[in-house]
Amino acid sequence: QVQLVESGGGLVQSGGSLRLSCAASGNIFRLNAMGWYRQAPGKQRELVATITTTGITNYVDSVKGRFTISRDNAKNTVYLQMNGLKPEDTAVYYCNAEIVRLLGTPYTSWGQGTQVTVSS
Image (cartoon, rainbow, N blue to C red):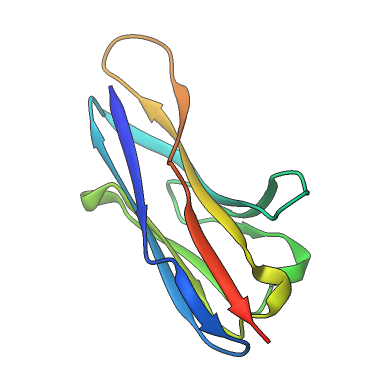
């Protein structure tokens, strides 16, 4: 089995920064696309950013210019640098990754989530 473990969430004032990390471990041959999603209270989970194995990134419009997704393939880790945080960024942030094993079909795994709270 594969585990994705997020870290780096917390409470920050508006305009502040946080860096989220998500490390994958377990039965992994390779990780394909990785991404960050978030879910605010009473809202659906939404895509924040994704990154391919070659570093091509994609962001939701509301975070463009403020958030940066990156990955370290040697460490099976994806990061989300969040600058200029706003109260509307408050949510539980989840990472996911497409897991490729030596045997079996690829599948998507999710982390348990980390809370980000931005105070005004």
